[in-house]
Image (tube, rainbow, N blue to C red; front, side, top):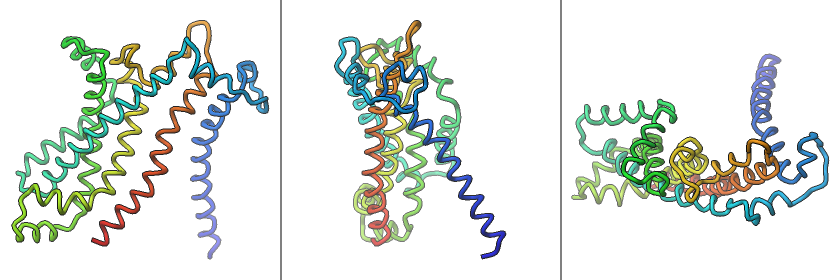
Length: 276
């Protein structure tokens, strides 16, 4: 290897590790505060005795309802993700593999792209007024359907990329065998894009689980999700640093487990599709 190539590889690795450090080190610092006393967090003590009091206050205190907040986040994320994946997969099959006029396809995709590019805060005020007008503000219905609308463009583009990667000859052969559009979807497309569906499910679930802006505007105390609940620990005269860190740690776990488990199924699904 030449000196220039070695220097280029060292520089590339340095950029990657530096970027990773910018993400990992602050995260580790926040998570370490979950096991510290408040005085140690305020004074910036690096090495301190480990305590579980922050988790006890977070989960079992009468002033905290964090377990219910986690349940709310799970309900909203699971239901909205399921609706998005089913809708996006069928829409991707329709737009990518059926005979749809070109102007219809580009109109739908262009609108979805425009919606995805605009900031979420652009729509929050309108959603608040709309759900308040029909008496659904602060309900699971309002938050869940809003998450569906917000995440559907991303799910559509993800599934369209997987659906477009399937060979057109498979669908031509299915048509020659007399398959209807529904049979082509269930017997040809669906088995081959299951890996892509798992990948899209993981990403959409994480976006819904970690959403703050929509949940802050549309939830009530009874439907408050975990990210909003964590923000309430920063009060006017007191900031509960330890409980905020503990809540952050507990909120990361479901998404992290989903990614670790989903990786294996994603690879397996993609390889199975390639073999078929």
